[in-house]
Image (cartoon, rainbow over all chains, first blue to last red; front, top):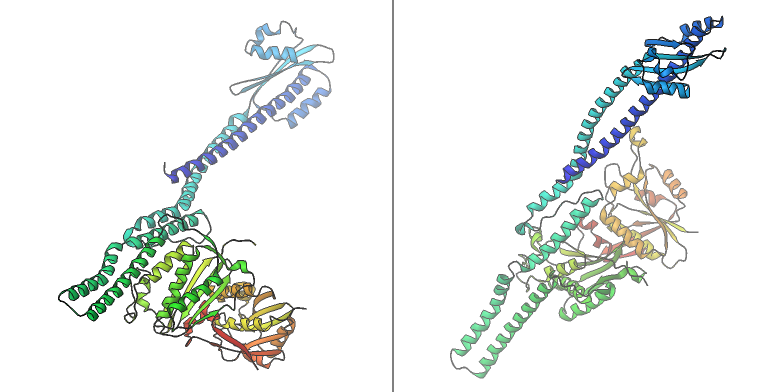
Length: 458
Length: 171
């Protein structure tokens, strides 16, 4: 069953059930009330009539007067009075053959009896006059209230039930649409996302509910998918292309050296060239391996406490060994006093690799100018800012900087493989962090690494 | 008694360097600091707008994400000495009103930039610096220069503009 219909049915049953119960209760109690009230009215009239008919005294005139003035005549009101009756033989009296037997028995046994037949209501009682004689008084009347008012009430309840039903159907359809709509939007968007446009993300709704969570979960999943897709997409073709270049020069060099006999110095020279190329080849394969390892491959990396200020100092040391001409300046001026705020749950080697890759890039593309690294803590997250004044990234190429093997158009004079940044981003993503790059061409690049703070206690 | 420091702001991250310098300048004191960041903006002259005027809402439209992040960074660094930090709008239009504002908030010190020009957010805003220079409160002028080559207008709001600067109180 569709979820929308399910919601409609549930709402309908609940509301209709409630309304039925409610109106049924009202109808029932009103009709009960009408019956008892009507028998009371019959009783008053029966006694008044008996007083008038049986007690020929002067105050019976007063009663008659009162009755005429204050008791309105009921519809089809009739009365029957049997004077001076014998209680044992009463039931078989031929004058009473029109009445119900059990009603008469009730009257004899309890002094009062009531019953109703179709619209006619009967009230019977034994009336004792002061001279100790017993008389049977039976009053019959039609209950106008039950025949007309109750019918009107019944009609009223049925029409209001019908209107309520319509309203409830309308309401529940609208309600279920409102509930379902965001989910259907997600479904529509998700259907559009395929392997060729994995960079698309679902819109995360503003209000904080399960739909928002759902969209976020989908986006997280897409992040992971995209990362592993990217690492694997074109991996072989790119890798073979990358590996082919040094291999070709190795083969060419060897070919040329072997073509004729040469002097030992020439052999040394060509072997050196071959060694150079082979080393390059090794570096490339290592980088490739790292990139493949850091993709989400289902294996869980070992996570532990990492102190970010220590990590940055380590990175600085490492980078200074590799890039000697750059100056790296650290800004720890906004470091918090509480060391716990600086700890991240992560893998130290991987984070070191990511940060050093970014810092190395900053050094490489800024031609000996100072590279600044700052560390700061914000509510719940740790931010590392790496700022250089280098060549920058052209703004129309910003979208591609995370593609493996992509190199910006202004990097021709710098050696590189285009693996560092995607690798760094993969690592940051593993740590639930975020990498933000902003750049102005020829002015410099600023990279912000946002990492969530680990929940450690002393 | 806590010391109250008044600092003008224009809701850019770079202007928070004033706060940073002010805090650095006061780290050695045992007393706690109360910081007030103030921005000059006239209140509307329409009665209906004044009726529903809320300082919080006005501030919300002026602040941006980076500014808030930077404030949090400063707070987490100097949480030991900051008693309270608030952002306020000054809407008076003469020197007396400003003096009253200083007195009302028990301001003991104020910091203004020497070489930084405040950017006004909208046409209702006005520059507070003339009020500061004319006031009788203890005034510190702060010089800071960014290490990086030049600061484009757009980068004023980057988180990085709070770093790599050397602010010092001019004498």
